[in-house]
Length: 460
Ligand code: C2E
Ligand code: MG
Ligand code: MG
Image (cartoon, rainbow, N blue to C red; front, side, top):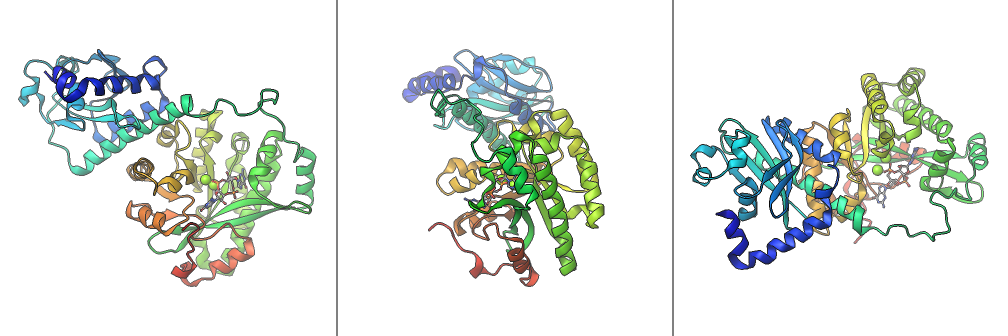
């Protein structure tokens, strides 16, 4: 029987105890299910039109189902189950027709309970490679074997589950709990800037928008721009957003600052379109903070700006991170749909850094997914990050979304991303964020195509 084989052959016993140790380190069996797991099973069920999909992790005796789509399943006996097959194969297992398969003549009780006729299962691994669980698709009728594309999709979805397990492990064990000295309060208000400094900066028009191009990787054509705020401080010089946006958020002054930014972008779009009508094809994106997002009437406000500046809604994009949607997801859902109806593009920023990005991605109407810079940076360093990027690209494709890779700094990253099917990129390789005047110059390039010599690798 598969169980006995797994436990005895070639030191498998040690491997099995390593597996159990890795499983227990995740704490996954004792905790609430992750919302992202539900997103994965739902996505999988949609894609494969399956009767049942489940995602489970196996200890010595049972397969604990952490998310099931279709027929509710909480646990299955491990012995004689699909998990044993996956473990023995150390990889995907596809059985097009169980009734015809000799491995299921005498066992497969677990499956019979689900009235399965066919299934496919792929392993979910920890970062050391041990199989912790599996993602399983079950159908009550026999199905043809899987096409290569389908198998890759299934593996990608399992990889996403693996990534969630990894993030969870990091969250629990990998990060210093709190590196601040104990006397310092958790949310210390920064000494600078105080709300009065921010208010004064607004009155004195010290904020400025810089722009960074978004480029089509295959052609180097500039297809969009991201507006990034700067504070031109009379003494401190050009202050980056991370030094004052958190204080602006804390004090609520992000609302007037954000209003200024939105109006400024619309005015700039009008200016560029007037200069050259072909620039109306560009999408200029603005970052939104949670507070702007949860305020009533955002869609009305955006609509009024579009009409005041006479620009088309497709010329404007709004970027938000998952955390900005977290506080009130129901309201976020309504606002996003209102914005979507207007026709502005919605971009999920920094994708991959949140713990439940997947969940939002599936239920919110985003057009574009921006892969967080941290993955792009690590992509050339090892298989793990490369696989994450690959998975995100596949996932976006399955959901009909465009992908923009953030933080492209080298030609190697550029080539890899293009080969992986990522269509757009943004990063220092193409241009750092630059002033509006410098951007106007950049847009004058014939066809808005950046010649090869303008691409400057930031790392060797
Ligand atoms: P973000 O929206 O993810 O913007 C991308 C950030 O990555 C920018 O930093 C950009 O300069 C930087 N970046 C782009 N390409 C590369 C690269 O190749 N290498 C490296 N190392 N960095 C790269 P920036 O301008 O400092 O902005 C930081 C964050 O501040 C933004 O992250 C965004 O979350 C926030 N932010 C910027 N402008 C605004 C704004 O107007 N409103 C709000 N609410 N937030 C803003
Ligand atoms: Mg952004
Ligand atoms: Mg970003």
